[in-house]
Image (cartoon, one colour):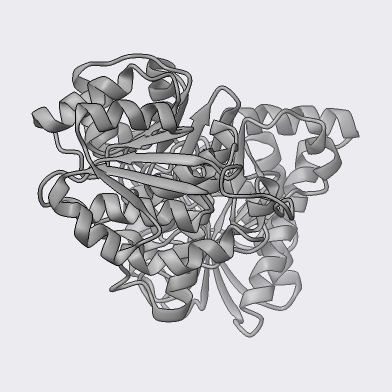
Length: 499
């Protein structure tokens, strides 16, 4: 079995809930619907049991590992149902019987014992004959690195050859951030309950979660009436933002986009951004760059308009444009600084990327008519912090960036986050093949092209990130992830913006 199981995205809900909200929410839901929390635990255990049977119908030996909390209670329910189905179950619990369990978990434990089940003390020597491991050690409340004996148990699970079904979240992973402070169970599947949590989708989640599944436990109607703290988008959502064009539409209606960048040796960045904006549907695209880049740029893509970047051409182009993209290949020397200072004087809608962000970090301002698209390194400079601090809590980082700089902020990475006054979203698209140069330039071009077509800033950012990641996923489906380059995405973009 691969160390990193192939990521599959089943049908998942669009709503994402922080751990504290989920804990409080399940209590309110139970009260509203006349259920007990133990009833919900029974539903959760059955959902996980059914998922195990779905994927591992022939495995007859299961190992269930239970911790001190309600996550362990879910494990007791799974074990009882598996035993009743004739499966040989070994249940190992941390300090079995030595520490009081929460009331619902205690009920589940007693039900397991009444059914004839036995409890062994969990230790690092796991039975090697087990064909499936159920991880019920630590749940969504964990906020620090797992301590003994959990850390050694987690490492033992990861050494075991059997596939792993994690209950709610892989033990050791922070449910709100996807941060791994210490040992984390590397799950093959994760069955979560009621709703998705941010830590399933961003941060380091993809290294640990495996194939993610969600069961609302019959609370769908109740959830529909609740506010949505965070939204999840995937490729099926593109039509939410993009509809068919009016039959008589023309290039002027589809927007005039100006791209500024391409310092010496950086012509590729501005060219990829410009072509991506055309592929996303912008009507007219003008590039201002160094004179030496114009010939190669027009030879490669004659549909572009290109001029040398001077103060005169920039002022005229700023007046001409509906939307501005600045930053791809801009550099941070005097040429780039002067271009950015003149661009600051415009009140047109703009996207700032790459070195425009690095220059912004040196001279901060707040604007509502702007999209920022930092990767974690650029985000750290904008926040005057470190990459490690940004990655420790990506949702907090993107919210703080939006608060400090205004507008809309796209924090790139596995599980890209989008924050604006309209809310916060996570893009459930993309793959490791995107870890190569130029991908951010393509994203800037896509979002800029959608802005030019008069999408609102938050919608353009969400749609652009989804199209970008989905294009990479389509390339990976055809050719694999390793060896993917940014320009591979360009033919896929025009297919995705026509849902």
